[in-house]
Length: 341
Image (cartoon, rainbow, N blue to C red; front, top):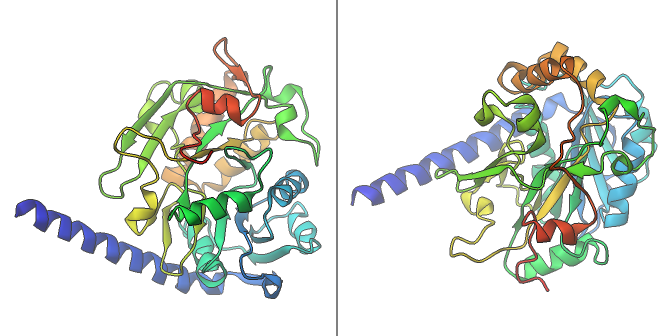
């Protein structure tokens, strides 16, 4: 009886949290100023990408090209007061809708209020991919099957969310040794990753897995590994206007969207987000974000980066692996085909 009461109370708490997040996103709508709104072009069944960014001009050409080839039909960007020409570049792209805001990133729950608002208004009924400009989705068969093949299979399997572990990529030498050029494939430089050194726990309230570890924990959070960034993501969701991201794309409500793993010893299909953070632009970007202090926990993560950069910028180690393809990641247990043959 006591357990039933506790479960009922938690369900009510999650419902109240979800309603609060939806209301909060709706109330933040005035912060978003449309620059160019091409959402009338969005057709039924289109796959949409939602992105918040600031000063990412050098990354945008490759990012857009990558996801266009993968099968994204339309991009919805929030430009958080960029001053590097990102907004002008995006406004010229025929498959991009763009909003601008100079509101505080932190006050908008690190941009998630803005994204939840756009998802609520434009994502309903669509498969929606929510990523940062340095995140690139890899999934089983991605070299031969477009994103629509994955979403069709997920829908036919009764699934409406798809997980992807964030896999930090880095060069073999010092980060600043090879300059990243606009339009360049970042993984021509940052080709290495940690094949192991990850921990997994379960969040009982939200039902999601919590993954930590990898090179950022190894390099920047050695004194306190539990303070390292979370690597679990659920970036691909068949959206409903009553859904909401709770914390970045780490977890959502309703709770069932987070249960993207098999609790009975089997495997469910999953992917990775190759994270192109550690390029020659990293030091400058970290200094900017540290100065702005708009990130989680008083920018604790960027303070750790800044301290680590003073000690050197080589992340590669003898256990690092050079990236080959999704099959390699499957062999290492970092992604899974599940029953998607």
